[in-house]
Length: 118
Image 1 (spheres, rainbow, N blue to C red):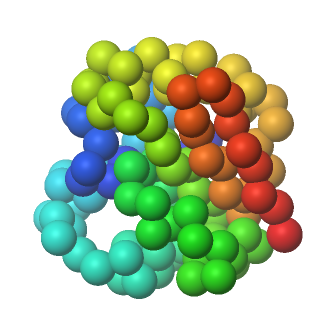
Image 2: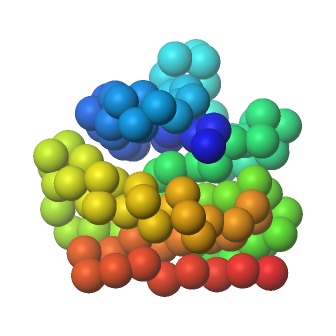
């Protein structure tokens, strides 16, 4: 899978994706730090990348409707420590690779994943 890692995620998340063999670019690597959400949505659409973010705005299906983007994985967790995010991502990756459909929204919580499809 191809991922775009938002600037609010730790570099350890990107490293975890790379270690698992995925193509992952960060917002910071592309000089896009601080870009607004609408512009970021355009970029991930054009690059056909799944956005990985902590930004809860991307969980708003009225604004970012499933079916109108390559996919979004929003981490909605209390502990945003890099180690905790990587732990959740490692636990999530097998399911994500098997079940993720293009254009889906996955909201990752401490105790599971909620999915939104078109």
